[in-house]
Length: 286
Length: 214
Image (tube, rainbow over all chains, first blue to last red; front, side):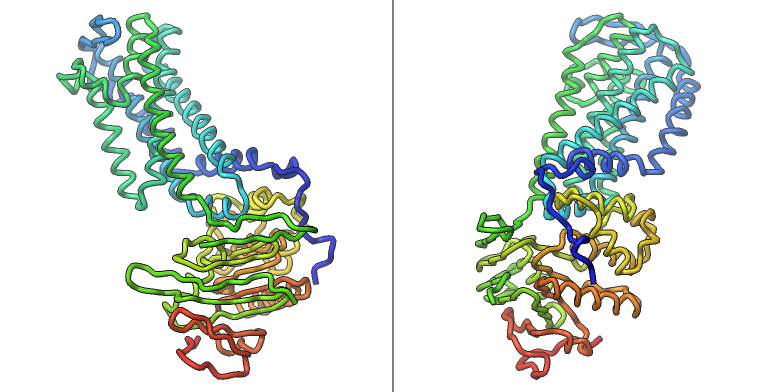
């Protein structure tokens, strides 16, 4: 028999006691969930440097023309260095997109159960958004640090690459979130992320795409990060407007994903009506 | 005694197939009700409707107090440990401490797995955690969908000890079961036949439909 001292007590504060406050708890466990993907970790540690080295070895130092759309300026740049940036964007799109998709999809039923148990959707949504932001930023910084092994741009140029990387990681993290709440199967989601990331980042590089300097590329998610990173690294300009376009993609994907998340975790939990004492009278009309 | 769970006229169809056709049920504090019926009769659908996790086509559910619902399939997060599950749901239920959770770990005999990830647990232990999460806030009404799948015999007996404790606390329990030999444990058997519940005592014969045999 369980004694009365073991009776669960509702906390006085609506957000629970300090130990079990909803938002910090959700953030902590969302981070744990999204960093437990071993394949993504291996890809990060192995794939990123190997991908850089492969690109550098294959491309060499041929000159390429790259157009900055906001200024109209055409930069003539080292093809190997440009391809390093493009390879970093490509690797981040795949790894972050995959890691977030996998974590969100697997947790959806569990999140629904948490909401049913009383978790506020806003707390879960805020925690997931912040955790994706933290992970995307850390992974982007890592990829930019590894880049330094192959190429030492100016500090301002490197910071521009970090920013471009962070935005592409956020964008594909948000894309992974959207797919995670929409797509039921693993394969469909992975395929969409791989195809989307490859096409998007490949098309931005004039090395592989003769049409890379055409305006149609403005409508792709990696356009803004690529323009900002290349403009900063080779043109000593900060194209903030282009970076904002990248952030807009990120915000758009995240907003759509979070709206679907909210709908899918919505519960028909019985609505409470206050009555005397601790009991609540609850009525649900279907 | 006043019923703490009153369901009236619950209807639910999947396409043209009507699963619930006006199911009625009343459960009082401390009462233990078994929902029985053939495979596909709609038992899980009924429990989801009572819990409010499923949109129905009609009917009302009135509930007094707090609700705990244990789904048939364990809904867990494989990357989180047992202890982390308890903390996550303590935050959801806004509990002040984990005393009840710790007590349930002991009662169900899996406290040694406190620091084990759910993904590394056996099927039976996952089911214990699944059940614990539904009980953590000491609900007034408990809905259990075949809660002891994968339990070994000892755990099965511990489960019934736990149910005895809950009944003494006044918890109303609705439980889906297939096991004919345990039906004497219940106060009421609710046969789900043609989308409606036919209530009888455990010692009466069913008036329609065949229960599943284990």
